[in-house]
Length: 407
Image (cartoon, rainbow, N blue to C red; front, side):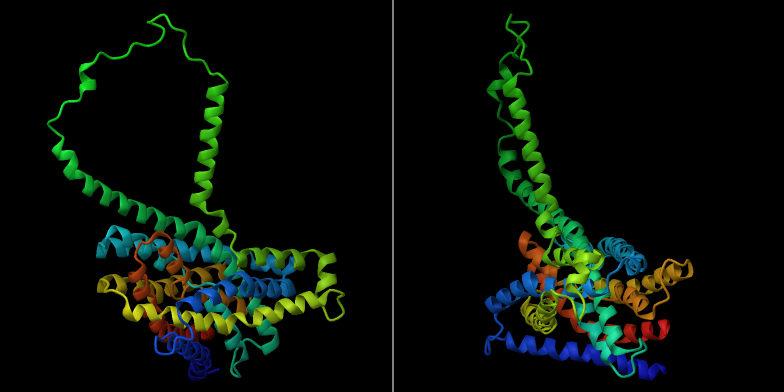
């Protein structure tokens, strides 16, 4: 295929996404208010808890086998490379732009975490259905492409909620501590000349010198230590946030792996003559509704960026350069190196998905994380608006180049 044909093929899916996103933005306007904040919240819950898990589990269950699993092992490491490279580049952006403390976690998160689930679930089926697609039969391309995108969504969710969540949490907590220190500096300085009465009293002697029995490691002490240990484990669990880590899409991926890899369950549920095929068909039916709803919600969420507060232009430019120029170039080196070393199978569609993981806009869930900690919500809306507005151009160009590279 010529480069112009590839460009036309690559532009069609992005244009479809752009049109549906624009429709979602229009429906969210106050004058229309069909997709207002409450409506988006309820729809997002349905997608998050029902449609996404159904989509992920049904696509993985159909395609995952022990043989295919051997070929897919590199994808989690490829996604890890995107997070590591993005974090390093995000740290460089921080050194150049010097943003406020409460935005540092947001900047690193936007540079590190791409939209590894929703965007791939939207783009891959559209690319497969295009007439000039270099990936062969549209049906086969769609089946395997959706399984790759589903695995990407599940792995990306684990990395996002275990890494970006804690980066934003640490950044917001440091910011709040700095505010507390500044607020208390005045009261501390007013008491500098005062003398504590306790400093005039003699130091307490240990029990042994007073003829009293020394404290022993008795039952009360053991109970106290057990309580402290329980509190420590609860704090660790809260900070790691296992509930978020095992998001519904991740749980759906685990269910899909179990159905696909256990022969007895697979025979019961997968196939035209399977006794319980109605369960799989119902999951597919539910999953088909996820993609259009996701795109509409994404458009509605971007409305905040139009009315959000101003943000440092150099900061916004740094994130755009990292996500749409630096990371895709790094991705080409990583994936081509893995192919040369024999770590990646010679499947053009699989290679295309691996490359595309480096060129995606920031993950929309970063906005949810900033809302949880109240750090940089309005700035995040502005970043997302401009990042997704420019993604229409960036994704078209990189999709064209990646298809040419693997075909």
